[in-house]
Length: 315
Ligand code: COA
Image (cartoon, rainbow, N blue to C red; front, side):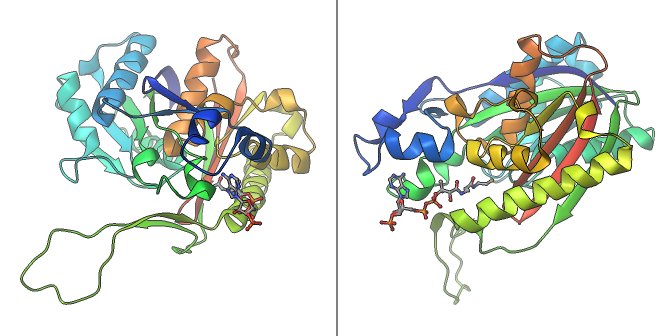
């Protein structure tokens, strides 16, 4: 498959580190050096489905196609206000189209998992155009009095339209299942029959262990996928790393021994927007005119599961 267009959409409200320190025992001096984050976009009066639809419309316009040409929508989302129907179906409704649509919950690597899935549909000849929408509101998953977690996240949506082509060179998905490292739980509707302990728990994250997992798996994934594609790291134009923490990205870059300019970053103004982070970064770089035809991008992302994924895409 090949990339035809991208789009993104962000909540209006931007929350700076200084804003956080008004109600939390934290400050810019702690947050910025440890994470690279200065501010994040946070949902206030917006609905996530509207951000997802806006990002999708922009990607469809950028691709120069009609929404009716989309054969499949894969939506990556961890949580939103709807349990059912899927966010993908709501986006299809908002776009006025009736193609198959569903959600995947792969946390932060969701965009790459969705690309891998779309690739299989293209290879089997079932589709000609696929819309991937990644929309996340982690600000609604966290405990806003837990300073070790809430300072890291931001909300948003990123989308990409793919058509037939040979530009997705490879994808690699991997899992190291460990549900305790990052999780959130919520109690479902009561029934007359439930007699077990259940609890609602905002996002819990073991930061240091997740940090190590992120750097180690990303370096491994990138090294393996480049070997599989017969590419040297120097032949890659940009490494599009999941925007979780600038220090994670720096750790990956240093271990690979590569220059800073190959690692675009927007975490300063976004924080970690889970699976939306890679497509938002892709859209911002594309709209800034960074890419020329034939450039090689390597995506790498990691997160709850623990899952990780990588992909090589020629633009
Ligand atoms: N402001 C001020 N102090 C804070 C703070 C904040 N926002 N968050 C934590 N602290 C304090 C802790 O309470 C602790 O204090 P103590 O030593 O008195 O107990 C101290 O800072 C160190 O905490 P620690 O959690 O060990 O910090 P760290 O150096 O590991 O950095 C993270 C914490 C979260 C920034 C880091 O572990 C990280 O980025 N991990 C990866 C998280 C991530 O990206 N997850 C998503 C992946 S998809």
